[in-house]
Image 1 (cartoon, rainbow, N blue to C red):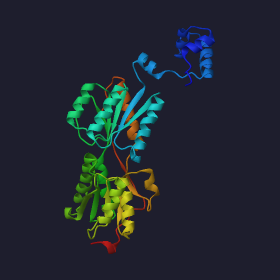
Image 2: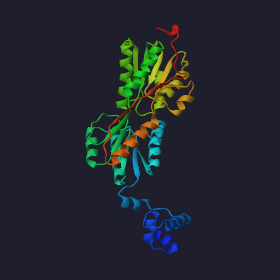
Image 3: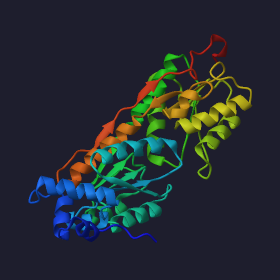
Image 4: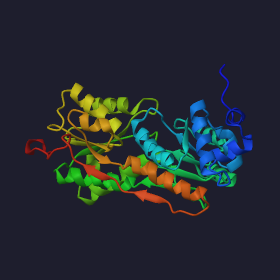
Length: 342
């Protein structure tokens, strides 16, 4: 094994004490600019890498942020984490990622492990944690921000950043009603009970407010043990409600599966049935047809959470944040043809 270059090695080569080298590398003003420059240049030439653990012990900060993510394979969260990482990079911090599935116990275990690593703060994505777990985390004293938590909680110290899911469902309903659709379906996801409920309520409440009969709104949910895209495919294949001319899906993954399921059944999208997703994944614009969707500001979710966490780490207070989604109209939704009205 190749031995790492140490401060003692640099001091010996430079002919100074190790204290002088240490101060020079930290930019201490007691060391002249000429000596600092010579030592820094020598350290670079020798391939010196600072010991981050030792630095964190000196500074009482690890310069590391922990992120607990529910599904590491979900492309949506990749864009959210990018937003977190962008802010961390500009702040000179690193991100330590833990996957915890859609499981309360795994999420708590991941948070505890990050706390043991002495990270400066933690962002919990798509949390399933309830009031009792939240109280435990409050008692731990760790600065913490939740993104799109699946359960409502009140806390004096833990903060949240979320999308307005009810508004997103309402936007989808407004769009489909404006296109003339009067018998519609909602394809949901029981793995995300909080956001699923709010999106479906926003959708159904708004349809009813527009005069759509509740009996003409069909609801289905994919199985919890399969991927969203497979669930969308299965629900589209199983849809057996005459007269349904539009489907609003919990997310884009379900919508993309639905596009494939309708295609396999010979149901043309959007001429026979319109499909609307939620999220605006990168792949949604390249599907066939390109997917109309309710767009979440994914990177902004991550950036906002990280900015708020940095404020908490600094000892100041910050308010919860709610971001508003927007409609992106593509080719998967179209005005209802007169011949399809029922």
